[in-house]
Amino acid sequence: MSAEDEELYSLLVPLADERLIVPRACVAEVVRYTPPVKNEGAYDWMLGTIGWNGRDLPVVAFEGAIGKDVPAPTGRTRVVVFYSTTGRVRPGFFGILTQGFPQLVRVNREVLQLDSTVGWSEGAPVLCRVKMINEFPLIPNLEALEEMIATDALPG
Image (tube, rainbow, N blue to C red; front, side, top):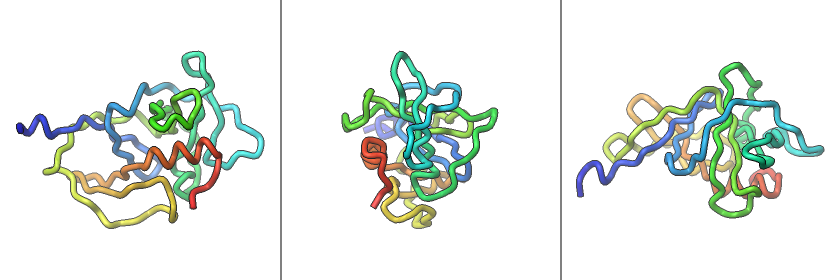
């Protein structure tokens, strides 16, 4: 098997104080930020919905979902639109607030190492943190995040 066969196109998604790393195939689109319509009684991390391709797209602040402060939007804020893999989130997509444009990277076993540093609350939708050259991105548990969105509930 060639090294190219073992590479995965991924996106580094910039958050306020962290980065996520996700497979490129999980992301449908990156769109400009528009203020979401907040649902009454929703958690702070559940920002509300925005109009996207004729749908009401639920948008979350990943920082809030892992127990950190929800960042204020800036001129660089965007929404990364993810495909729903569990079918629990309607309309089949959800958005994560990002603080800039995601960066396309190719990763393989040689550039990724598990990092034991923890910086999130227990039960948060995070699989782990990895070391990737000079970066220490989080690998999100997108299925757990979808469950949180579907039930608008805190983890744990």
